[in-house]
Image 1 (cartoon, rainbow, N blue to C red):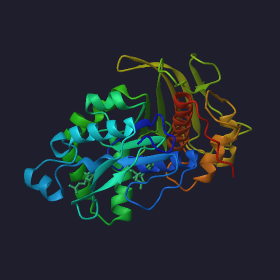
Image 2 (cartoon, rainbow, N blue to C red):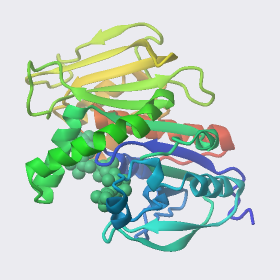
Image 3 (spheres, helix red, strand yellow):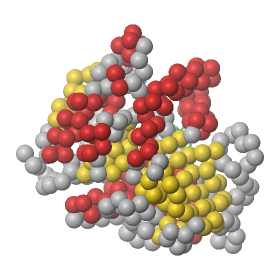
Image 4 (cartoon, rainbow, N blue to C red):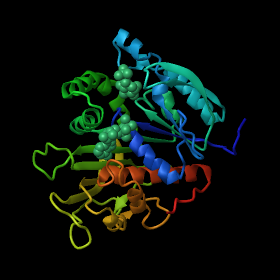
Length: 344
Ligand code: ADP
Ligand code: G6P
């Protein structure tokens, strides 16, 4: 039963509203773990299996419409089954996981999922249920502010999918109460939160192309050491635009310091602005500490490899890479195994 030499599956939760960068983040995670995502419904790579929690919808699209509940409502999700199945995987058992088909909006026949070294569960409610929180070794919340969420949705649904602006805005509004009640509270107790806010560098910015991004890192968590700038625990503002970093308007500003996040001690690393030349990020990397890299330049290399992914030129990409490196380190600490870095 305990196959593939997996003594201790490490279970990681990634929570966010839809359209908030979960897939993009997981692509970066896969790059760092050097795993190939297969074409099957649930990607089962060599090391990492990603489970989308939409598969635990109890109501299909029609059912949700009839009952007038959103996909965010716990009523539309089977948390009991979710808990049973993730707990079973953690114990080393195979499961037959349901499938929610995003194309048809129907619930498809279940598929076999086997335990893996790392299991990432991503979706709306990874730890809405307190029992789920107990199963998770690491938790990441992608906290996208409303203004930015709207800009991203418009970009994707209008530019790429041809939806009408008023429909996009109406859909966001109709999800808001459930989002605030059921999804957003999970950010309070995530180990790492990537918070994405409008820039402060451009007064009244309407474009939302420049972002202020904060990596909120819990202190005192076993196996997790927060990334810091220059000097651990101090408070630092850093404008690196000078000889080593090309910056045009509106520039780049870093901040680092201790803070409080819903009554938890945290360290916050913040960057506002865009990186103009990605290769120069090595200069930023040289000033970051506790990054969990395996060689100098690994962060820069990861961003360059994925340079076309959204956010590679700003704090979203940088902090997604840092968070993925933390996941690798945690896996190594919990299992005593070592994952070779991906070299180009
Ligand atoms: P999810 O998996 O949570 O639905 P995706 O990773 O597919 O989210 O991202 C959804 C869309 O949001 C992308 O197609 C892109 O338009 C936009 N997006 C996501 N992350 C970023 C980012 N860091 N910067 C700019 N746009 C982004
Ligand atoms: C998934 C997503 C939800 C999204 C839903 C679409 O479940 O996680 O965020 O709302 O699909 O639902 P719909 O009722 O529009 O098919």
